[in-house]
Image (tube, rainbow, N blue to C red):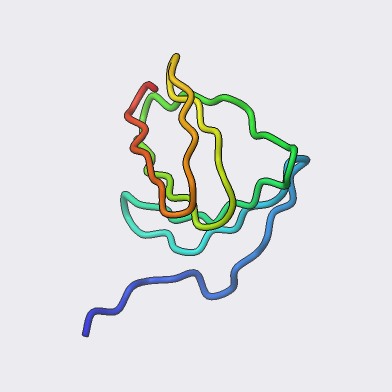
Length: 84
């Protein structure tokens, strides 16, 4: 059985659009749980040093990647490359 490092205590960080919490953080990887409240949105971001993989676990997400807008249902996922 493989063990996975987790943060000892999960602190919820409030934001105007909802909240996030870091679930795990190991060399080269960080896993966050993000809650975006209905009718709210997070700002568009561009990361020059990292890629991201997003998975929708509840609700419906409208995600902008470059010029493309994706609508993802529960179970939907998207890879966001470095610089996107």
